[in-house]
Amino acid sequence: MPTAVLQTPPAPAAAEPVLVVDRLRAYYRTHAFGLDRDIRAVDDISLTVAPGEVYGIAGESSSGKTTLIKTIVGAIRPPLAVVGGSVRFRFGGEIRDIYALTPAELQTIRWRHLSCILQGSMNVLNPVRQIRHSFQDFAFPHMGLKPAAFWQAVRAHLARLDLDPAVLDSYPHQLSGGMRQRTTIALATVCTPEFIVADEPTTALDVIVQRDVLTMLRDIQRRLGSSFLFVTHDMSVHATVSDRVGIVYAGRLVEEAETPTLFRGALHPYTQHLVASLPRIGDTTRRASLPGRPPSLADPPSGCRFHPRCPLAMDVCREKVPALVEAAPRHRVACFAVSGAPS
Amino acid sequence: MSLILDVDHVGKTFVQGGLLSRREVEAVRDVSFSLDAERPEILSVVGESGSGKSTLAAMVLGRLVPTRGRILFEGGDVAAIRSRAGRRAFMARVQPVLQNPFEAFNPLKRVDRYLFATAANFVVGGGRTRAAIEERVDRALVEVGLTLAEVRGRFPHELSGGQLQRTAIARALIPEPRLLVADEPVSMVDASLRMAIVNLFGALRDRLGLSIIYITHDLATAYYISDRILIMRKGEVVERGAARAVLDNPQHPYSIALKQAVLTPDFG
Ligand SMILES: Nc1ncnc2c1ncn2[C@@H]1O[C@H](COP(=O)(O)OP(=O)(O)OP(=O)(O)O)[C@@H](O)[C@H]1O
Ligand SMILES: Nc1ncnc2c1ncn2[C@@H]1O[C@H](COP(=O)(O)OP(=O)(O)OP(=O)(O)O)[C@@H](O)[C@H]1O
Ligand code: SF4
Ligand SMILES: [Mg+2]
Ligand SMILES: [Mg+2]
Image: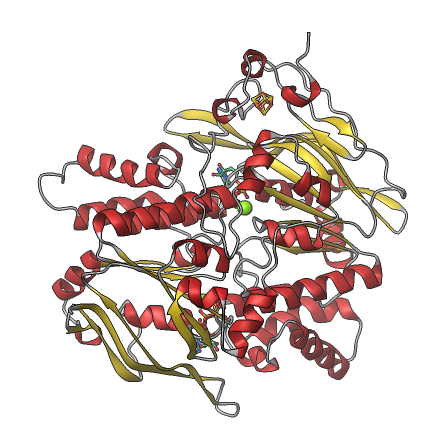
């Protein structure tokens, strides 16, 4: 049995946070081949996001980032279940506990204050109808504009994402992968939300278009003081837009720091490996990968979940779970090699 | 010199819009390149979103018929393959990894079905027993950091983005094809696993003589692993050459702008 994890709350930011995620646990409770098993995709994660802050999340494939995002925005469908912890947003001075809301209240919040861009899912776009209908159905009711002004706003917004307004007359399958991705971003952001949540929003884009999309998101965020919580594997994007970055490994947050610190002075061995593995134009030195595979979240390694692959692993790492503790102001790390082994 | 693939002045025009707003989109315009059978290589195709990369890939795979020009694979016209047997012989030698696995996999079909079907169809010899097929599938998954146990019985939405993408790569490698057409195969995979997969591509090229068309927006991995590169914009190839020479010193204004827009993971 892992020992109970004691987490230090992150350092208080200047203003009250807009989002407080507290000791969140969300598992996929599956029954396969006559066996019940829990896939512990989000396992005791705490973090906060300040007003106007861009909080970036990175981490290994299948470590639970998408599950964390879904859990935070309340997009929870069986077999996913929240088994502990809470998610609270503060909109207009009012605290909203996501799991205490009725489905109708959650819908209103999602459209009025939050905007979600989920991973790889272009399925907000109806495959048998032209794109314009999606804007008509989802965005028009929330914008409070007359039709002419609404379509003008939509066209201007599409242009900022390097999209020709002609996409409105296309069916989703007639667009390229990157054009569909930008269309879903346009749909989610045309209402200029207070809090943007995005999962791999720019994976299908060339670097020039990606820059324009990130600029647009940054503009909304600066102009309205919105917060932005997003996941991407592209560490260059974090280096460019994130104020803080959290690193997820096997369902847990293992390190969190302000972006320059994370790139220049990462303390967790997984983060150090991740940063060192980044390829660069002009560099062909062979990159080694981590030994072994991403761990199973149904039966994660005991103690520190990184121990089977960690070059610094000690005996204690196999037995005890390292708590996420502050190693320096606004820099939290979960590693015994950093915090010292418990006695 | 014998060519494994010869793309000869190929173009594709689509018609979009309704009766009143009908317009033609020239997705690919007059593109030519070839791959040498004796010198397997990784050819990166990079460029603007919407520049025709996936359309080009679909034509190489025989999924779309070119409006102009023709594509020869091992000397035969890809668009002329009609029979089931011909199609199957082609697929044994040319395999796809399609862009965005969430759209490429049927959401109602368990992912392992694709893997078992591919292994049963294409793995020849004494290896057709259930156990041999499972062993082959597991071996392919282990190469990309997964196992059959993790994938078995799962629907596409029950896997993470990177797991699904790696499953697609594993499936394509099962038949041991001559040519892999990979459309953004690692866009949802973290940097460490991404390097493991491009290293795997390099090893398959060197060990098994696999040729790879690697479509990507990630210029850093294109630089790291590929031999040649094509840079596309608005349906055309605007620059081509040895990958490192082109990326070290791009000539076309679009290539220069593309390289300048690359964000770096460096600080300070
Ligand atoms: N509906 C589901 N049922 C069962 N398991 C699931 C389901 N969805 C995801 N999982 C599992 O939960 C784990 C975490 O998945 P998640 O999608 O959150 O990862 P991720 O960090 O977003 O990965 P990636 O970077 O590859 O997208 C994975 O092992 C995945 O297979
Ligand atoms: N089935 C189709 N019907 C009509 N137009 C299409 C179809 N498929 C693609 N197009 C158009 O062809 C052009 C090229 O699309 P393609 O998908 O080949 O681009 P791409 O280079 O792969 O882009 P991305 O990097 O965004 O995936 C786009 O303008 C797109 O709208
Ligand atoms: S706690 Fe131990 S195993 Fe885990 S990262 Fe630190 S040194 Fe490595
Ligand atoms: Mg994900
Ligand atoms: Mg494409």
